[in-house]
Image 1 (cartoon, rainbow, N blue to C red):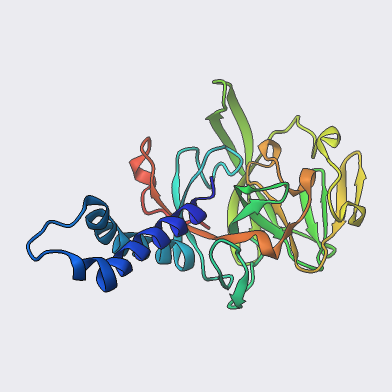
Image 2: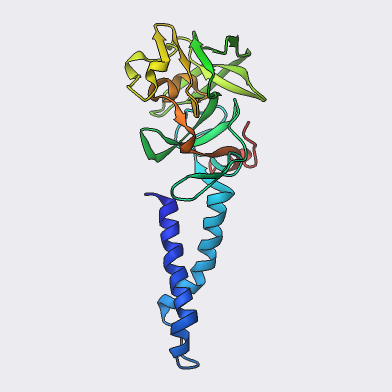
Length: 267
């Protein structure tokens, strides 16, 4: 369900009832008569829905992390806040940018609509910007001919879906102004060739046994999860156009299983 469309519909209905009551229904009501329930409820909910709609559309939007593709940065069950204006003001529902403010930067954790099904929201890290030539080979990122700094940082252990206990190699990667932790599994391949689908701009990429190189088209971004070998990302379904951007993740505001994560900034 498109929640923004639902909110907009509720806003229109309650607002229309409030307006009609103000200019028409109230004048014909006998003084002291109780308002019909549908008018009372609409007048009560309209300002609340209006505030929530404006906040969610133009300032911040909450999301819940459903998968482990961004471990260790984000854990399953994290509730996060997403900045809706850093990358420009967009009209609700149609997501058309009307006021450009800024652009995604390398290393940003970004929420976007999944290119193959825009009704689904994904969250990944921006690793490639428009015009970049990006290579990922033997689990090392190279951007425009320069290897991205990568520093080993011990092991990381967690339980996957299905209660599989996994030990991964943890590293610190520096992308732009962001230094973040990422995970790789030593015996896993750099990518799974059989999972690569046909997508717009795939001819911009050259795939080999140990990795691939992509020239990122104008107005599009290359996204990868921090849990590199457990992430379904741009390696497999392609680039993210600017029109599908939702916003920049910046704060964990709740986690029922780990209260210590509350208030943690997302880098």
